[in-house]
Image (cartoon, rainbow, N blue to C red; front, top):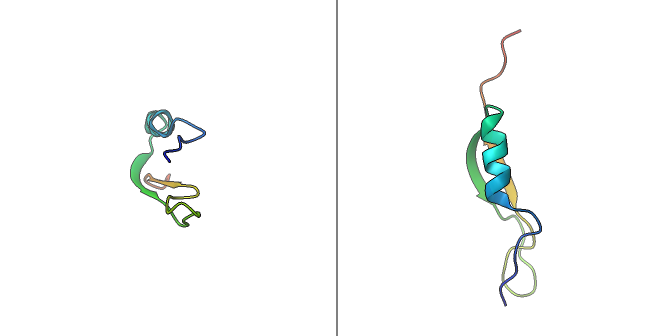
Length: 51
């Protein structure tokens, strides 16, 4: 059974990239009863702003 994400993760990645964030990884920390990820964490990074 294939489920689709509630949100378009590709669009989320593009939107964050426009704000200076770099996509690092998609992480699936838990698995539901069907052996698929219950949810995903999208990890971004960017340089800390100088104070």
